[in-house]
Image (tube, helix red, strand yellow):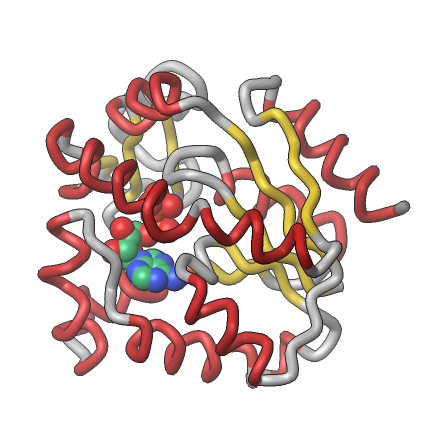
Length: 210
Ligand code: ADP
Ligand code: ZN
């Protein structure tokens, strides 16, 4: 199963990817997590990406495409994968097609901008393992501490209020057109991302069974 999750930043792609990859026993691939890891480790890709990420802009296509291509060549991707946060531009989607990757479904998690703004403002991430929390919707057992690894929870630089607006603008300009791209390919399914987390997962799994 090769699956793409589409949706605005904060639509819940990461949360759904975690649940679904568990269910289907395939890896979930977040280009955002890979990039943050690269920044932390100071790799060439990380150096190229950092300023864009901090500003809430997209990292250049060639950088992200190379990272993704590498990742899906790994052994654990043989039976499929879930892409969370890739593609984010039409050229990235075209690159995926050119790699010969045939997608089973593109699931768009639809959430209005106003809801996104409050969600991202409350988001906290583990500085150690990257796990994602929300102060209201998905609070950790102990405030400020990661349930999974005990790491410290922080506000991502790109979750600052001014940067959130920029990311939403970038999303509408560059990523939202992908819905049309996959609709034309007959692959698009849209789910209401304001539902309860479990209801969204159930709906996605049902789409995949069909
Ligand atoms: P979110 O979905 O919450 O916006 P991600 O963790 O997916 O965040 O991505 C964080 C940042 O990493 C993005 O704002 C962007 O700068 C960069 N990034 C991640 N994936 C891509 C991509 N496919 N193309 C370009 N930039 C990307
Ligand atoms: Zn952690």
